[in-house]
Image (cartoon, rainbow, N blue to C red; front, side):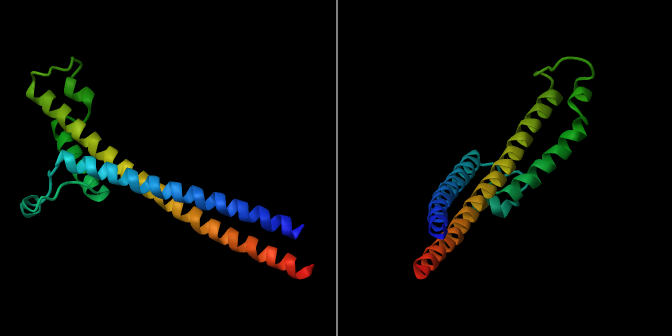
Length: 153
């Protein structure tokens, strides 16, 4: 019985480690993808002039959150809500106020989406690491049970 439990734990350990490796790979790959896309967009709003001169761009969750919150604040200075902007009318792309508001909300949503994506990649990466650690612990327990079963026979 102990030998069978040890074998089951070894199988579960291999599965956990394999899944953890996949999660770690996906977390790193998607993090690189999101950061690469953010770097390609070259959003520099809110960065000091020295940082922009060094080629820095908004490519971290923290920077994106700060800039998105700033854009949202500025957008709310135009109108607190989209309905308030339209005042019961229709969107007019020739109206500079409507156009500025829509550009601001697009940038704001892009940045918040980046924050969300980078946060999710962190969770996936942490989950993968946890799976690997759990797999190692499960495997060690399985090996210990097999050794114990071998010594009792």
